[in-house]
Amino acid sequence: MNTTTVAEVFPPGEFLREELEARGWSQTELAEIIGRPVRLINELIAGKKAITPETAVQLGDSLGTGPELWMNLESQYQLSKVRSTDGLIARRAKLYERFPVREMIKRGWIEASKSIEVLEQQFLAFFAIDHLDAEIPFAHAAKKMAPQDLPSMRQLAWLYRARRLAAEQVIIAYSGDALRQALPRLSALLSAPEETRHVARVLAECGVRFIVVEPIPGAKIDGACFWLSATQPVVALSLRLDRIDNFWFVLRHELEHVLQCHGQDPGYILDQDLDTAVGGEVSEEEAVANTAAADFCVSADEIVNFMQRVSPIFKEERVLLFAQRLNVHPGIVVGQLQRRLGRYDLFRKHQVKVRQFITSSALTDGWGVVHTV
Image 1 (cartoon, rainbow, N blue to C red):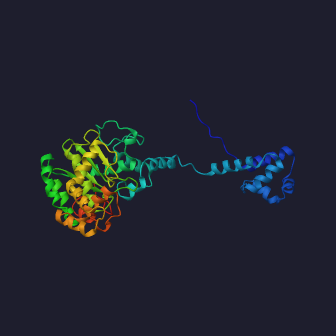
Image 2 (image 1 turned 45 degrees about the vertical axis):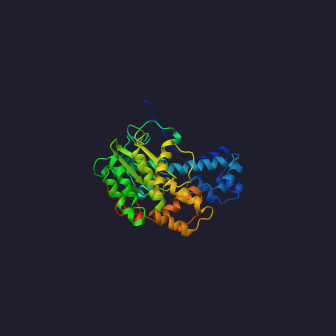
Image 3 (image 1 turned 180 degrees about the vertical axis):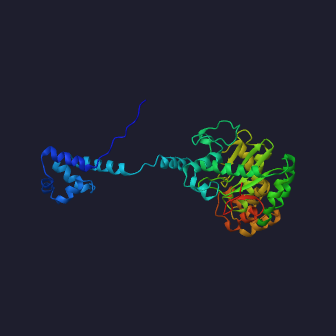
């Protein structure tokens, strides 16, 4: 059997002693040559003093070895005196390299621990994998996706958290017919920000699990539609942009994915940066969801007709009267105008916040609240 023997590392002074003996020099003579006290040479040989860059240059010049030899000897000796970390630091670095460790601990998804074994086990359990290098599919029957379409680890962590919360909910069986019939009820809630507090209840009555999870910085998630099973759809929102228009657009976008059974094959549809101008290059599924969401907020016929009447000057009072006639909050009209015109500075004061109302009734994880699972 082969065994590995770790070579003993000697202090540089041992090599310096041998150099002096080989030349027949005394410590006093070396001290005179380099212009340093004899005591220093004695302490170097005894291993009581470390070789500094200045001393390394002087020894290198006097002994003809170059300063690098002495600095290398000193470095090796000092490293040999430091106790090995047994790979713990490397394991911790690997964990941080792959996962958003700090954010997940901060949010209470992973419990902080000084033990690398405890941390590793928590990440294995969170992502339901056998080893830390394993591929992390979101759905057990997911089809293979192109690398450019794969979610980032921050997005995956957010998705896994949302799925775990959704699995805790106990609601009635999903009915597509019930969800379609509920759309007018949801539309009636567009008039005021506080009305958003009813969304969770309306969706639960249709068998749709509704989850709100605070986004991880850099994940750029607006929402997601995924399926716990073929009959258990989930709509998860991040409320990344806390605005009434963005909330209703993203919600209706995800609901259209549910109604069309989008995402059942890969297990999920992840939507990001939905707050963009109309027209970009998107998939057929996304185009369908975008159209449904925009038409839900303000019907295409209505918004086009309004723009043709008032363009190019969009006065605030005209916008407010238009919103009043449609019985929707002005911020929702403003959001649609911004998207169509590419004018995201237009009447922004009307895009009021809604998060406090939504999270008062929806299953929520984040913003200081950690849902226990």
